[in-house]
Amino acid sequence: MTTTRYAVKGMTCGHCVSAVSAEVGQIAGVTGVDVDLATGAVTVTSTGLLDDADVRAAVDEAGYEIADSNSTDSRTADRSK
Image (cartoon, rainbow, N blue to C red; front, side, top):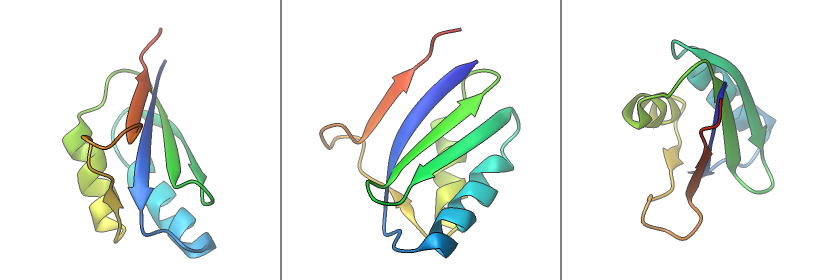
């Protein structure tokens, strides 16, 4: 299992959480999506490494964006098996 955390900008309500969870959850290999509305953190659990472009596209499709990866703590990953 791989767990990756992203910071998503623009979420303000439960609908936002549902939209991001649904879109990211459709990516092949994703086994779980946990969204923390208060912090904007989206934790994705998957069977293997995900292509960040796929996650970015899914978040974009939901109407939000992943914080710039150059920002401090905008994305961290625990890629342990």
